[in-house]
Image 1 (cartoon, rainbow, N blue to C red):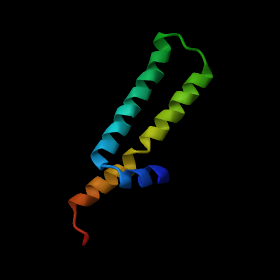
Image 2: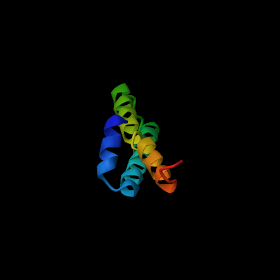
Image 3: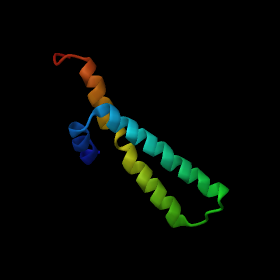
Length: 75
């Protein structure tokens, strides 16, 4: 999340958060497709889950920054 927060500060937050959530959905679909394509390789599931976790880290720093922009500095 630390690296994701640094990247999020330099990119437009809306696009960064949106692309991260779309990528998270994509990796979740890939995880589920393993059932339909009879993939019984543990390495496949580990790699997909690790990549899914990496793109999910775009969520928290971006959401906190977006919500923080709604409130003034005094709050």
